[in-house]
Image (tube, rainbow, N blue to C red; front, side, top):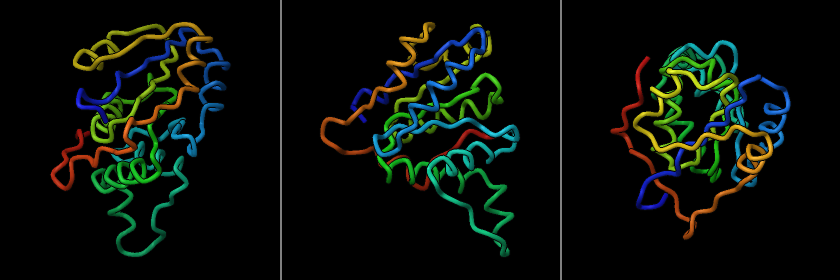
Length: 180
């Protein structure tokens, strides 16, 4: 991450919800190149659900059974801490999130917090015209709006490299994730 903070958020405005935009986002998924695409599950309203979607996209699985399973599955702090750790470990520099317009405001804020914590480029695929909710979400965050598919494809396939190969280690144990 540069001294000036993480890259600006990029919002791809797919105002007609055309399948080509989602296909382009899925095609950009190349974890080995530092690009991760997620398409959140329909049950993403639970506090830790989006974190679990990210872990699955990274090829990570949650512990099976046992006494701690319920705590892990329902607790957002350990899940988001795990996501940050794996993003840094796998050197993910660009996170692409489909269907962002369907996430709750709390889930959207968790994505912004992850961007800050890990210093990643966050691209949000918004499948409707710009809304007040989107403007409110981004009012404290630098961002770019992209409204054409050719420009979107260029952004989606861009791989960012840090100049010195270092990564931001995040907020450590004192990090506060946005709550419900």
